[in-house]
Length: 188
Ligand SMILES: [Zn+2]
Image 1 (spheres, rainbow, N blue to C red):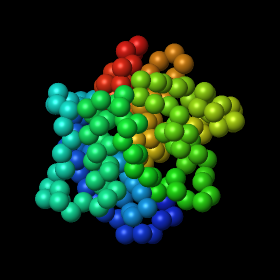
Image 2: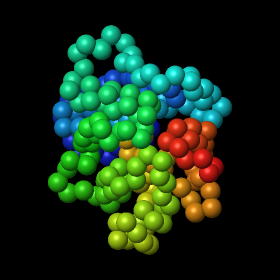
Image 3: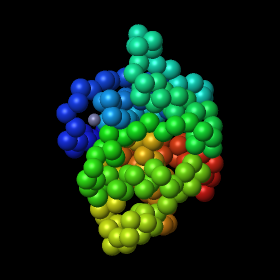
C-alpha cells in the first residue's frame, strides 16, 4: 500500500488480520487508522480467497489490542460476514480524516466512505461532482490510487462509466471483482 502523507507523529501500533481475501495489514495511532491494506505482494496471479468469512488476529497480539484495533477487527469481521450490515458497527476513525485542515485527497476519502455504501458503485466523475468539483476527475483518480486505508475507504466501489476500472493499477482486478460481488454488485 502507498505510504500515507500524514502529518501525525503519534506512535503507531501495527497489526495483521487474516481475512477471506488474504492478510490485511493495519497501522494506527491513538487517533485513528493510518493504513489498512492487503499484503503488498497480492496480485491477480496469486489471489486465493479462502471461502470462509472469519477475520482473525494474527500473531500473539489478540489479547492486548488497543481499542481502535479491536474496533477495526470487529468492523472487518462484520464486513466479511455481511457487508450490508456494516453500518451496525462503528467505523474506526481514520487519522488523516481527523485533522483540522483536510486536503483534497482526504476530502475525497471522507465523502466516499460516508456516502457510497456496500452494494453501490460510483464513477470517478460522479465522485468529483459530489465534491462540487466536477473537473477534478483525475485528482479523484489520484486520491484513489493513494488511498492508505483500503476497504474502509471503499476505493473498490469507484468505477469507470463503461467498465469496472482499475484496482491497484490493474494488478488486483480479481480482488476488486471479489469485493464488489461480495457486496452484491453483479454487473461486472
Ligand atoms: Zn495518527
